[in-house]
Length: 226
Length: 327
Image (cartoon, rainbow over all chains, first blue to last red; front, side):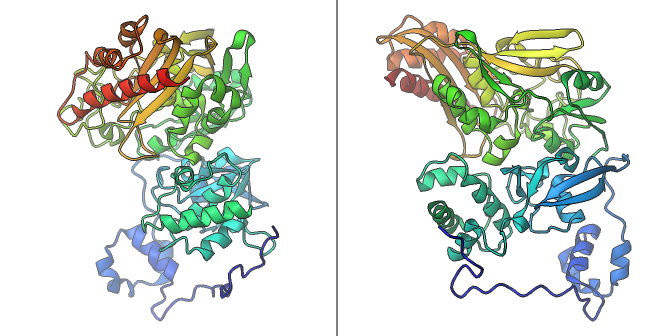
């Protein structure tokens, strides 16, 4: 069947481009605020104090030191992500997930458990779904990597994306890009027709909110339409 | 994570040349190794990437045997039509293993070398003889619900986590290895060690050895096989107990049978005692139960895992019933 144009769902309008991060009156942006929280390990209960910390201070905060010493000089790597080549210099120990998020700023791929247990980091490598947290970026020169940002084509949502919108296949949304990447790969894999088979085939993606019934409905719709 | 030198190799000779360096490790799918590197349990200083080696084929050998390249991904092996037809136990074991994403990454060689899920092995704050020989074992007096009841010692009770290796054990697989001294073939039954007083030594591989293939022998026409896995949830979980059974029947008599248990042993657990208890006997519930009693005779349950003794017996009894029923 022909792909739907965005908007895929009646009443759904694409969001406007997000505005560039604007510092608030205290000079703190959302991302720098969150960065500061994680870098400093400061408890959320002390949040009001953070407003006195300037963005400049946040930027110069040292990266959290690793419990193990030592480093190896970065090596040149060319990564093909969503059809585009990126020339990077990376330490070999940088995972594909961290490269996508921290170097290429493709924040759609999420870091959940970072140990291959939750599926939030699912991307496609050469068309197959994998956990990007359990592989190093340097291992993927010459591979074709697709993230959630590269799933829609020519402004048309992938059928799985459209189905997730139609069936409300999420609550908080944190697992959603992983769920969608997993489901998009599932369309090309052997998987039984019934809901139980879909549950098994989607078992590598955990949803803490428990949106599973809607996720299954969305996956089944996308399978029928593909 | 500790820093490491990264080397990508194009051929086996290149791989063997680098991998003899101290603290060098091969990386294939990475699903065990990178996980443990993040926990500082594995700390290689050189990582040899073998993903470009052309060991990714499943080949039919003359006389009906099959040769599986070490780099064949678990998902490709599970869905291979020859494997599904000839060795359903292997396909079933693989599809009960991990998640679709992990199966797309994990390789045949890597799966054989999976490390235990023992909590105390994975957490460097605790004593572990496998991780740090001589340090002691925090699991023996700790929370040991997932731990082994067969093949344990006073030094280690860690369970081998693989499903694939349990099926391959019942299929009498052979592991083909390339090393500094050339090629050798080791029956899977002789590949793993029980922990004894050296739980850090898990298998026959020497530094620099590379698994290149696994071969499965041809099965007699009419041979049936089955994998049954019991776990805390329906999918994406390690076995509490599992059974792989490969049986050749003559009417209602068990002519030849191979039995292996998972989730209960310090290695994928072949039970020749249970096999001998059944061969030449009638396929009956009481004979199955008697064979299962024999298989678990040497079980040493601990504080939290005593339930596994009965669970393993029932799992094996059920698997025997299913495999001998199939017409």
